Image 1: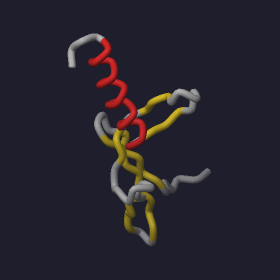
Image 2: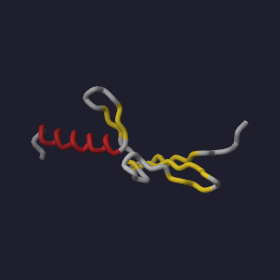
Image 3: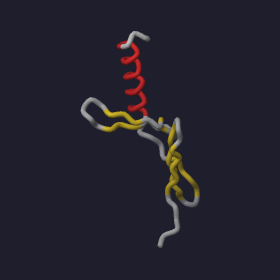
Image 4: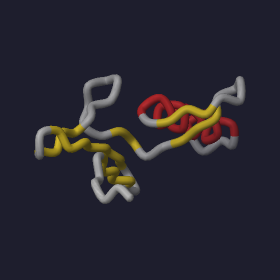
Length: 74
């Protein structure tokens, strides 16, 4: 049975991060955009693919703005 933890994940309400132990020290794994954290956001694009992080956050903001304009509140 293994008792060692190699990764730590912070699933935050606003942002999330992951770190890995390397040579006894934690190292935060950066996103594709070289950021230490990513938005805790999930979206489904028009092709029904699941997207996460910064692209999902941007898609959700764009969709929210489209909905506001559609219903006359923006």
